Length: 153
Image 1 (spheres, one colour):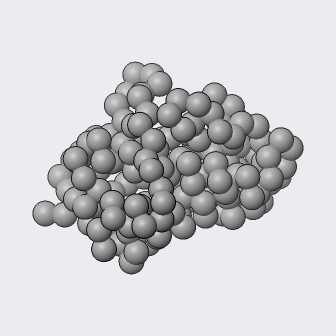
Image 2 (image 1 turned 45 degrees about the horizontal axis):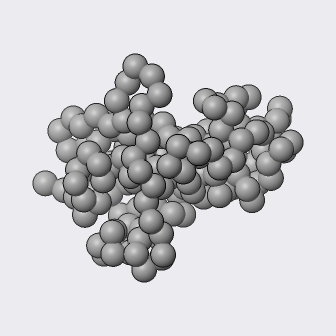
């Protein structure tokens, strides 16, 4: 499955790769792994979802926020590698949900990112994952996603 062709089939256009918001780089390659810094739910620099799930946002809008985080991660991967076709598999996803105290439905929110990776990469999009609720994220973002990718030899 060609991931860039799959994006086109899905009618999805990647945003511009987000720039680092601090003293770090968007991706670091070591061996055949690419570590992707956390991305928030901004599309071409404009925040799409802010606030906490359970207050300003719902699980459904949080899901969309996580999907946008995943799109930003894909944009960073493509910028680092030149093509998403160089991805062997999505290895691990760390998902953070800006949520109210005692929020326990983080997995349903981060499914927005996980399911996008499955749609784009098929079997190679299956990954291990953590989904954690927190009391705040950069720029008030509703979600943030970090990803580890295995590269083709």
